[in-house]
Length: 206
Image 1 (cartoon, rainbow, N blue to C red):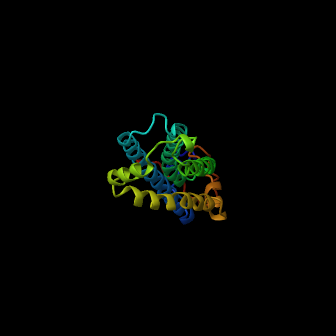
Image 2: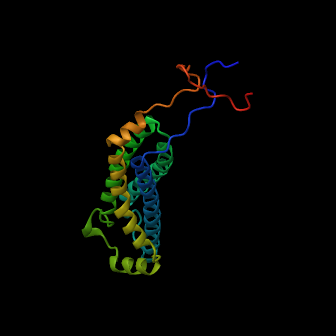
Image 3: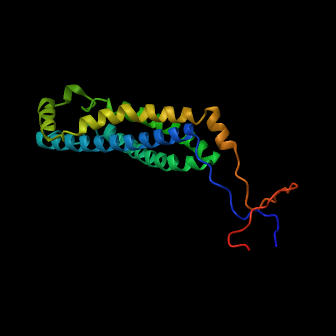
């Protein structure tokens, strides 16, 4: 018996090229940000070892480093979330686009704050009482630093934020709006039958 219900399901729609480009840029931004966080973690560990060898007084730059680690962790988690959203956005659900805008804005803000912390001087609060031999620290860190850290940090830092910003802009274009506003037909929604219309048959129906 044919009930007039579409039991074949809704055909999958191919993502619009604008949406596909946005997802690729989101994935690129997420991967670049993870690479940047990894490079920064290695760099900080190298400088800690250099300070230990030189004999830097305890507590040097403690507050900036703690904030740097916390913000770096937040940036890494948001990068993982962006990778997940890069896939979810291809499904055409508007809520994933809204989450991407919100998370992308927060990620850009935290990334800017993280960059500001990285630019802070690593010395103590009182330069007159700072006895750190910074030349020795830099020399030791230069010998211990892996060769890939600086190139990866520079390239990923140059790519991550612009790619994310462009991806967010692409999601706001009219073509993307049309893709996300086009609702799928529910498999339980009754079909309107017109004359000379052939209804879809369930799989295995005879």
